Amino acid sequence: MEIAEILALKTWAVVGLTDHPHRPAHGVARFLLDHGREVLPVNPAGEEVHGRPGFARLADIPVPVDVVDIFRRSTEAGAHVDEAIAIGAKVVWLQLGVIDEEAAARARAAGLTVVMDRCPAIEWRAHGPRPA
Image 1 (cartoon, rainbow, N blue to C red):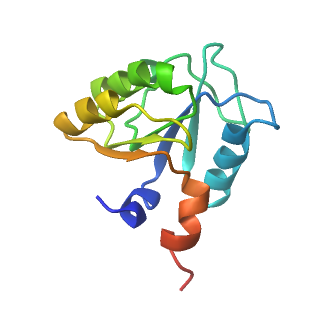
Image 2 (cartoon, one colour):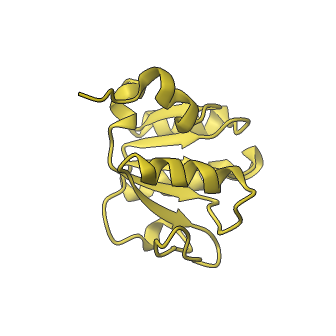
Image 3 (spheres, rainbow, N blue to C red):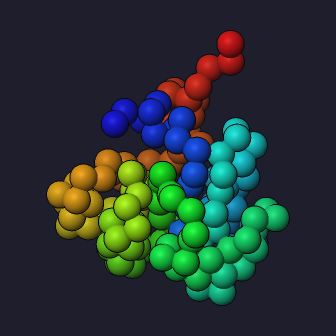
């Protein structure tokens, strides 16, 4: 799946998203919302963010998830990749600076598309949908 196809997917679970406006996840989630994507915050407290109900784990999300966007340290990303595999996500997106080649290989072996060390808000400029 190409970047443009991924950016067109509608339901994004953002792991590590909290209601702290100074954090990169906060701004990227707002960007996704502003571009018509459904954002599902995933954080240990299940905290609501941007008016969207939060979930403590990916497994707690009651709807199918297209993209799992991970804003966690590389050392913690693998567990979330495994959760993304378990819930049947289509794509796992590891944010800028988040690199875990072993977890990426597990995701690919399970049939997921993997994007690593990139940001959807940045990629949107080059690959995002264009106005009609």
